[in-house]
Image 1 (cartoon, rainbow, N blue to C red):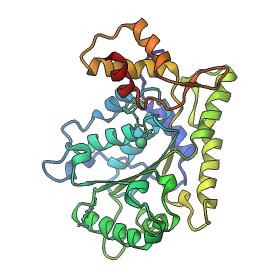
Image 2: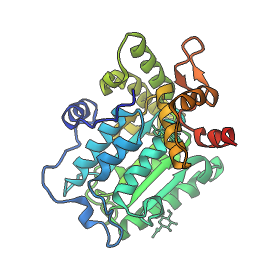
Image 3: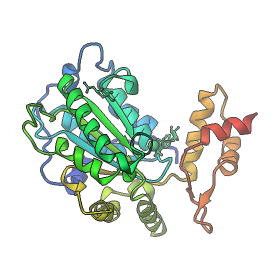
Image 4: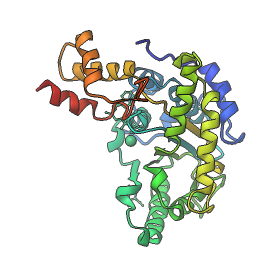
Length: 319
Ligand SMILES: Nc1ncnc2c1ncn2[C@@H]1O[C@H](COP(=O)(O)OP(=O)(O)O)[C@@H](O)[C@H]1O
Ligand SMILES: *[C@@H]1O[C@H](CO)[C@@H](O)[C@H](O)[C@H]1NC(C)=O
Ligand SMILES: [Mg+2]
């Protein structure tokens, strides 16, 4: 059901300890707020809104919400992080990875994705030609260095990370590692977020397996998809060449579970309210079946494309 996601800090923190990519990430205990040092006029007006935003807006992703919230809280409470925060979101299309990254950004910068301190790259759009990887790489290094020099709290989001050329990844990896300073610039307060479909299939499988074992979705723990994610990490290592080991720099690998019909219903509700319509439950359920394809064929439980295109299909359907 439609229960709002509760963010259970203590439980999640334990899970993070289990799953932190390496044991090196320290959750600081002092009370200085991250938000206070964000450049003037850019700090979010709702510094404590992270939990509310994630819990309210990110449907059906209790694991991701918990881990993200704890990662962010630990990072912002830590005056002296030893490395930049690096999050890697994994899951199939339309499960809310971009949405989650936007919610994080909104909680740090009032202007959200429009902030000049937020830098978004899509591997396929921004780095399309393999023949130009060296150019992309040096340009990106230049931009990261330049922007972090101007604002230590700069954020960098890389979409379609699973399609990024290994040479480019290799080029940006040093910024995310433990370095007091790299060429006179320190990167410890920056945040890097990777988004990608890598692992989506495996996460979907493990969700189905646990469902078939009679487990409730809400009972699914990070631990349960850990094996799935380990193989994603493995994929990164062997991917094209063993140039690069992502797991050395990523602090949290975060799974986005496949969305079920009940979540599609919620996405439709949200969209209808946004359209100024009064959502009628029966109508919405009917639409959840009409506008979305479910798999596997026999069970028809999981939406192939999550909540992606729900809005446009709904609009089309309403006309
Ligand atoms: N878990 C979710 N909760 C709420 N809305 C979602 C969720 N997943 C997807 N959506 C909606 O579906 C659309 C596509 O989601 P997006 O975050 O771009 O997916 P992804 O980046 O994982 O492919 C967006 O409009 C988003 O608001
Ligand atoms: C900051 O990054 C942007 C790309 O997001 C780039 O256009 C700009 O030149 C960079 N700034 C510096 C000072 O390097
Ligand atoms: Mg996306």
